[in-house]
Image (cartoon, rainbow, N blue to C red):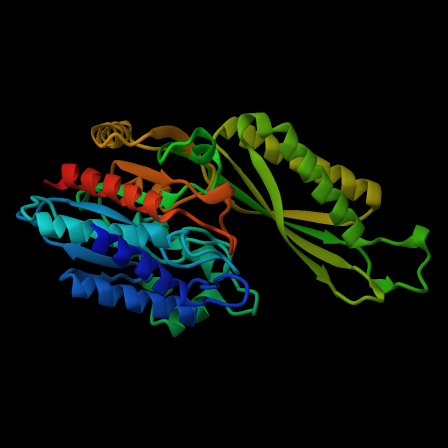
Length: 409
């Protein structure tokens, strides 16, 4: 097991080298560094004797054949892409941990069902504004029309980037899989919260995953010279936008008792000159929670607040709905199995909710799905300071391995 631990930690460090910069790791979806990390994972899969395929959106599937390959596969996996200046465990733990579990299962031998490691493309929304693109495509939820209009920060369109990577939006439907192909899906992940750390538990058994509702708000004022325009005659888009940001903060606080959060994560100010009154501001809003009614109420309160601010400030405001997904419950039988494995191994566990979205929420449409969390120090994620203890990582892999074994034996 010592060599096993060394292999896992070393591989996590090797993946961290792809896109590593002075502040964290930047491995945006479909970027050169993301492609290089995917190629490296494919090489590791092949070293382990897995049959590797890549689908039409770039999801990588490494398959360990079973005694009866006509049976549905037991699957695990996560993603390799990161947010800008992210950490080295988010997503990667589920990929390397999943491969480590398959290595162990291969040594045991005699599995009836095939076992798959899936590396999902573009889980993060950082580049194109849409999350879990790969897993959505795999379960038949590809939104080619909306995605075709998406552009990254450099103005490059999603179709352009897809073509560059030899993928084609017109053929995404071929990547969709049926429920007959997958028996179950288990994702290992860092918690991205403080529950396990506070409760001093090593394993989190996820009961439900919060879903994002995302908006783009465009505030239109009048660009004018900052020196020659009197304060009382201005229509400053940034002032109105700032009031909206504060309103969203207050609304999020009002809904926090239901576990709902609201965040303005991005602002673009036009024309962006020190001596010009801002004429337009674009902002992106992320609403998340487990309680669907609370999310709806939060959304309506934001719309009402935006309308009132626009009228008071005499600025034009438009709201574009980018996505609206419902919270997803994990499979009770899978949760019970993970609990059973934890009890058998005397590992302290905690049932909890995931406030971050994951590929597992989409896979739940295809097959019984579960998530295993391990602690993240101080709850930090999407940050260079992201850290999980080596021992916690290995316990997570132990629980994942046995869970996969019980499903595939």
